[in-house]
Length: 439
Image (cartoon, rainbow, N blue to C red; front, side):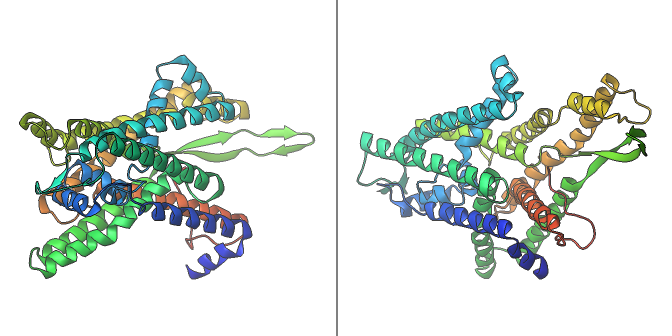
C-alpha cells in the first residue's frame, strides 16, 4: 500500500490532480467555518443539539456541521442536487429537455447551465425559509439566535450569504470533477459526512465514560457499522455478466478469430445517487415548511413534523420507497439497452441464443429489471434499518445512508486513482485483480 501511495506521487499529472483536489477540499472546509452575519452560533448549536434526531440534525450531517455553525456553506450542495433531480424528471416529461439529454456534449452543456440557474433559485428559497425560522429560534425561551439583526436586513444578508455560498460550493465541486480526482459533488458530500465521524465517535466514548451508555451497546453499534460496510462493498461490486460472442472476421488478407467477452451489469447501476436524491427530496420540503412556519408552530404542525420527520414512522417508509424509485429511474437514464443492442449489432457481436437487435434489447432490459430490484431493495434496507436501530439506541448518528455514500464515493475515487496508476504500468491498490468502481 505504501508503494502504491508513493507511485501516485511519481506521476506528475496524477500528483497535480491530487494536490488540486486537496486544495479544493481545504477551501470547502475553511468556508464551512465562515459564519453568516448576525447569528449567535452558540445558541443555535444548543438548539440543534436538542433537536439532533430531527430534520435539522440530518441536514447538518450532510453538510459537515456547517448548518450548526450557520456558515456561508450551511446549505451545502443540496440545492444543486434538487435542481438536478428536477431537470432529469423534466427530461421524461417535456420533449425539449429529453432532446437535450440525447444531444451529447452540447445538450449536457445546456442542461448544466439550467441546473446552475435552478440551484440559485432553490438556494434562495431555502435561505428565505431558514431566515424566517431563525428569527424565532430561542435557547430555552431566553436567548435569541439573532440578538441584534432582525427583520428584512437579516433576511437579506442571510439570502445573499447562503445563496452565494451554495453557488461557490457548486463551483468547487465542478472544479474537482474537471481538474481533480473523483466526482466533485459526491466528494463534497463525502467530506461533510467524514468530518462528522470523529465528533460522533467522541460523543459515544464520552457517554460510555460518563456511565450514560454501556460498553456492550457501543461495541454492538460498531459491529453493525462494520457489517453494513462489508455488505455495501459486496453489493456495490456485485454484477451479472452476460456472455457476448463476436464472430470471425477478415481484414485484408488476415483472419481474426472471434472473441468471447462479457457485458457486466451491476446490481446497483445507480450507485449512491438514489440515496442522495432521496435525502434531498426528504429534507428540502421539510426545511421550507419548517422555515416559513417559524420556530413557534401550532400543535398540529408539530404533530406533522414528528410524523414525517426522521424520528417519525412515516419517514423511513417514504425514504425507502424514494430510494427504490430513484434507483430504477437513474438506471433507466444512464443505461439504454437499445443503444447497447445496436452497438453489438454493428460490431457483429451477439448474445448466444438471442437474436440481434430488438430481441437483444428486450433480453438486456429484462435482466436489468430483475437485478435492479434486489439492488434497490438492498439500498433501501441498508439506509433505513441502521437509522432506525441507531435512533432506538441513541448516541450515534452514522446511519446506512452515510455508509452507502462513503463506501460508494471511496470506491469511485480509488478506481480513478488506480486507472491512472495502471496506465503508467504501476500496480494498483490490490495485488490480485483490479478495484472496480461504480462506473
